Amino acid sequence: MSEKKTKRRDFLFTATTAVGAVGAAAVVWPMIDQMNPDASVKALASTEVDVSALTPGNTLTVLWRGKPVFIRRRTQEEIDEARAVKMEDLIHPEKDEDRAKNPEWLVMLGVCTHLGCVPLNDKGDYNGWFCPCHGSHYDTSGRIRKGPAPWNMEVPKYEFVDANTIKIG
Amino acid sequence: MSDHDYRPKSKVGQWFNDRLPLLTLANHLTDYPTPKNLNYWWTFGGILTFCLITQIVTGLTLAMHYIAHADMAFESVEHIMRDVNYGWLIRYIHANGASMFFLAVYIHIFRSLFYGSYKAPREIIWIIGIIIYLLMMAAAFMGYVLPWGQMSFWGATVITNLFSAIPLVGEGIVTWLWGGYSVDNPTLTRFFTLHYLIPFLILGLVVLHIWALHVPGNNNPVGIDVKKPSKDTVPFHPYIVIKDGFALLMFMIVFAFFVFYAPNILGHADNYIEANPMVTPAHIVPEWYLLPFYAILRSVPDKLLGVVAMLSAILILAVLPWLDTSKIRSAVFRPLYKQFYWILVADVLILGYVGAMPAEGLYLLIARVATAYYFLHFLVILPVLGFKEKTLPVPLSITEPVLGGSPNLAAARNKESKIE
Image (cartoon, rainbow over all chains, first blue to last red; front, side, top):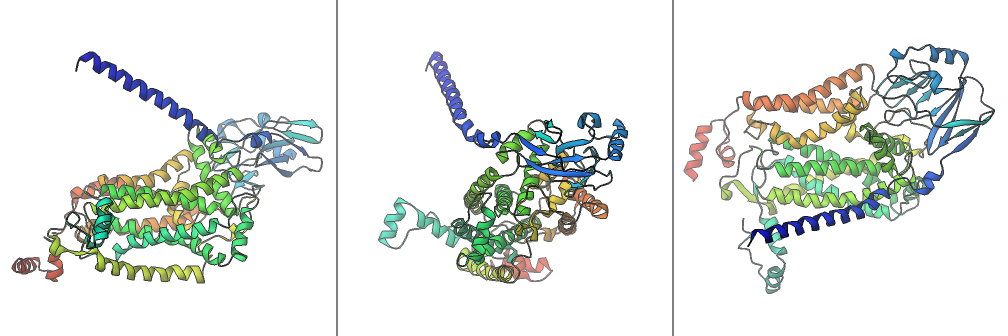
């Protein structure tokens, strides 16, 4: 067999494999992507909540995209406590001013950033939240202070539609 | 082995066997020479096969009544318990069968650890076994989600969130696993599909596991190779079949005790409360068979490293044949390894205990020490022991200690050579 013929074979072999691989990937991708959130799940993107009945020092828990959202009307002490914390003391440094634009209202996903449990209100060493699953302590701004969780509880996109209504998402 | 010269007696048998040698296979499995000194710890392979078939049969029948939908799953399980004829029995067998399956597999694994069954030339059998064990954990976890109780829901949430520890792509993977932004109906339906699939994957791997076993043959309590098949072995049937059968009966007594007298003792009361995404139960605990690994997860204060430690604790077993440097298989002839073996057993039991306790104070400290020791055993003690340990003399053949019956090896050897 001449050298030229061998090279031609090699080329055909490589080209066939490459086309086959692209074809296989094109078929595999829909099989993988079908598991991602579907259109009906994505459609439930926002929720409006009436918070007129909420008094200071209380928390309302609502469901948004299948996850609980804490809406906390904070007392002045809680706000002062959250704002007095030094950035050096935080595991995931975020200013309370950035997390609660309107200091009286703290809106965040009630999901522990460790493994997704719902933390308990008014518990833990920092007077905020405590996750019963693996012992993460959050402060009055929902920031992680102690325990295995890596981040602060997430603040979702939200806005006040009017004085008594919050739109989440 | 008489594989190659086997010929069925009947004409029909010969005709069939020439076209598909199934009868040759059956003959191989019947005549398969088995070391004659196998003890009852070797009966768990058969028991595990029974467990797998039990789970498949009860699972199939449950699937005829179960509805995989977030709004109906919980009710359909109650429907099985109250309305379906013998539904309670089938479900209790299936639920407790999972625990029995793990009980048997842990004994089977620790048997291998004691007698060095994972060592050359049986590494592939061992690795296939570890893959089966991983699939069992996946099947058990997803099965536990199906009743859609509080523990189902929050167990699913916690375990799927383990993947969020992966840097950069973690959150995306979790959303993909869920098919949404939280554990919900899409999660339930795909878990049901996979829970249905995995037992058949396990069945396929069990075939490979046994095939790989039949290449070198069984290890045995003295851990030496078969020297003379005619003297050291007995045919699988009837000797081992009867022994396995007797052990299986004993095992079924334990099984039946749980099914009929304590069907819920291994479960959690919280799972009789329907899933509620707004409230996490005060104390989330996995099923007992996952507790040691759960303790390892919680003993590490960092999220990513905790997940890495937990996975490593399982995957480290796959490389065990190369971590154990000792040439001697059986712990019977390894006085130091034997002690470390029992310390490891105690260590895993302690991990299991603290895994069920809250992760705080003394429990957390114990979990950390036990986790450190677990890795120390595999990564330091085993490799070093192979070089340092002074092992006892192993017998010349499997028959020798059987015939000798005395600590005087020289006398036993003389006796054997006379018989030869």
